[in-house]
Length: 265
Image (cartoon, rainbow, N blue to C red; front, side):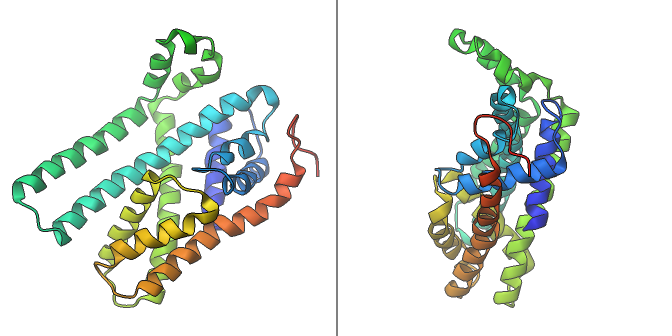
């Protein structure tokens, strides 16, 4: 869990390098504070506020845009790996006409290419926003999108990939421990599908364990009948990755000065 969120802190520090120089400790503070506020807001929107309040006031809105770039990178990997895993799942467990399956494969390829191309050309979003008259007056906030070149975006994507490997490993370790005999490839496939489905559903972190458990129970039901163990794995990861960090983050929330910079220790 700490490796997971320390990697996120390193990514956040890297994203901020073009906006405001922050120390690694300050990045850790902002990440854990964001986790605390995220559990009370739909789709983790509070995480944006929790992080940017550790920046100077005039750079907070720009910080939201930079954080969105990092989140888009994470979403790209979740969608690409999830779509590939879902394709493999359909091939293994769903009996489809070969023409329909072939059409699905084409859709998967187009879907993955769309996300990859969009991410590495995220400056297009800057151009799209500039094309609308009512958004032009806010260009000083989102113009940072034009600063991210492909090499920079690739570095950010490597941070995202490292995190993806870490939290996938958390699930993998628990499933191997609690449900012996599962094939490793099947576990990896189901974990990727689980992340993919979760990313598409609206949720509230505080009660997200129900959605996670139902989704995991359904898909893992194709490879094991140990429903209780699957739910236990999912609930454990929810507790370790969401609830415990949110509790730890309350310390940093109390340090927060919402109208200026964080209070000194």
